[in-house]
Image: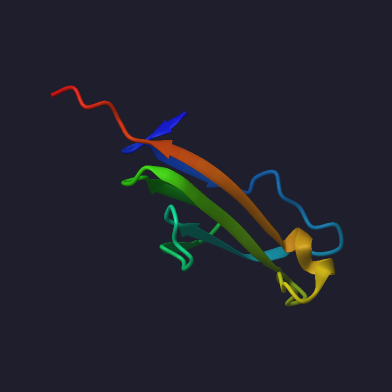
Length: 95
């Protein structure tokens, strides 16, 4: 369980590309209920401290050495994008 104020770190250490190499990693965070990106990170890891409770969407999109990246109109690019939902609860109010 995650609570407001917790910090989470994601990395891509277990990722691989069968026929090439991944050149770019873009992490996008979406606040609970938001449609647009709240914040984006570039790189092999992403660390964020959650300041709001609710369900956050975290998305990773990669680009390979051939210039291929996720495109919703090209189903074959689906492996170039990964999403997870992370539930963050309000912390305990001790006062």
